[in-house]
Amino acid sequence: MYGVWTVDQVRAAEDVALAKAPDGALMRRAAFAVAVRAAAMLRAATGGVAGRHVVLLVGSGNNGGDALWAGAFLRRRAVAVTAVLFAPDRTHPPGLAALRRAGGRVVDAGDQVAAGRRDLVTGADLVVDGIVGLSARGPLRPAAAAWVAAVTSPVLAVDLPSGVDPDTGHAEPSAVRADVTVTFGAHKPAHVLAAPRCGLVQLVDLGLDLPAPDLEVLGPADVGRAWRLPGPADDKFTQGVTGVAAGSATYPGAAVLAVGSAVRATSGMVRYAGWAADEVRSRWPEVVATGSVADAGRVQAWAVGPGLGTGQAGRDVLAAVLDAGVPTCVDADGITLLARYPDLWDHREPDRTVVLTPHDREFARIAEPLGIELGTDRVAATRELARRLNTVVLLKGHATVIASPGGRTLVNAARSAWLATPGSGDVLTGLVGAALAAGGDPLVAAGAASWLHVRAGELAAGGAPTSASAVVAAVPGAVRAALVSAGRAPGETGELCDHERRYG
Ligand SMILES: NC(=O)C1=CN([C@@H]2O[C@H](COP(=O)(O)OP(=O)(O)OC[C@H]3O[C@@H](n4cnc5c(N)ncnc54)[C@H](OP(=O)(O)O)[C@@H]3O)[C@@H](O)[C@H]2O)[C@@H](O)CC1
Ligand SMILES: Nc1ncnc2c1ncn2[C@@H]1O[C@H](COP(=O)(O)OP(=O)(O)O)[C@@H](O)[C@H]1O
Ligand SMILES: [K+]
Image 1: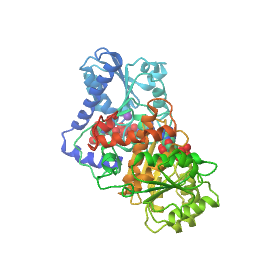
Image 2: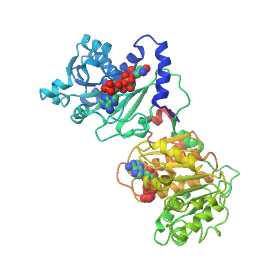
Image 3: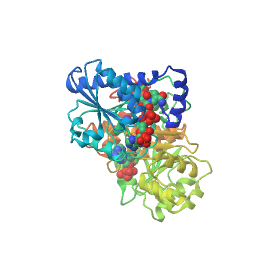
Image 4: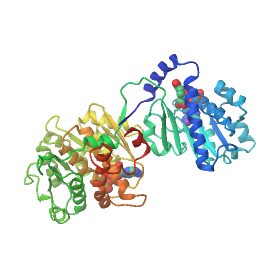
């Protein structure tokens, strides 16, 4: 698990640290780390460091100051450094002086454009983005955006890729797309909400005294610790029985997929209730399948909604599931039904756990009548819906945001987009249902399910197209990876991303 802090939180902590440290010490520490990483990137891209050409894109603030100091450090390693200044009269004075002393070249962005020389950036071996950091507001301004568009080399972003909103991660197409981001003091929301723009994120410790994080990111070891394993005294009924109410004559596949992921994620009993009982039985013979929720028998959690349809029959199923009074994951058509017929909420026991797992359109359907808009701040919207409905809300996307009614929020960033495939959401529904049935904190259950979903997607894809059925098949491998990380299963840890190696 690692934490993520908002700009305001980071600024408050930095103010305290700045008051204690000698003048410029924090910036030089930050910049030195940028220079070390820049040298490593040069070596990786060109086979060497000395004599290579680095272009610094330098804005008016301290982010530009970091870049200039990093340029000065790179000069010591005989790198040719050119700083392109976007606000020559407001450029960080000590950073500019340091680069000049070290023999760096300094040009004015406007003069270069006037002389037709924006191609300066095209010839670079590496570009360091010091345009804007924590003070970023709105999309990149046109002058900076034009330079960024001309970049062809690897990019190292200082603190944040410029043009990405630090707190919401919102990015217009013009924003910097970095290969590596070197950030300072704490992870900011943009690093997890706009992970593809950041590339590899390296955190440089500034010794900040930080409050409780605004967002949390579960690592494999957290998931491995949270996942319920059978013990010697367990049998098929004691580990939490999962019920799945999904699918219809038109969409039997949704039932097969949601049931399948629950079956592959746990060793406990899975029950199915619905119109696709024959299909479910023939694909998953270990499942007890019946036609109705009333006949299904007792479960510790229900997963309801995928492929259910939005007619009266689906409405009756959802009402019966909520009447059962156990923790429930509501997805897909279940969410549309709740949006369309809010009286369905009357079937929920007060405070009984409900986890909603909408994609954007489902989110809009249920949130807009409450006056909540899914704008660019996905975290704020998810939190608000969770609070208003007193449910856990898991908003799907490349970065999945999961908020509890009390505001605690997890983010799970995907590292590929292969899960954007039909039926992939049904696989997640089954995983959330299984995690809820096993007990424990519902937010962590939903977060663990989301992590396993993403990891199963990665395992299934392996860098090539995949399918929801293949993701189901990869679920045990994802569970194993988490358990191994938590020291609860023997074996190799498998491919862990850099974040996970360091923070898992
Ligand atoms: N505090 C610390 O302890 C440490 C801080 N550190 C570093 O300081 C950085 C924060 O520096 P900062 O606050 O000086 O502002 P920064 O982000 O450089 O912005 C500069 C100016 O850019 C402009 N601008 C705004 N939006 C824009 C846009 N979309 N497109 C283009 N331009 C835009 C706007 O100026 P304007 O033109 O509006 O007057 C704004 O004021 C932080 O990210 C980290 O790198 C490290 O050294 C470690 C120690
Ligand atoms: N671009 C993407 N990158 C990573 N994951 C994605 C992307 N698009 C969708 N996903 C994931 O795939 C799943 C799709 O779910 P959903 O929209 O309900 O699809 P379906 O209805 O076909 O099952 C979600 O878990 C979502 O987070
Ligand atoms: K930047």
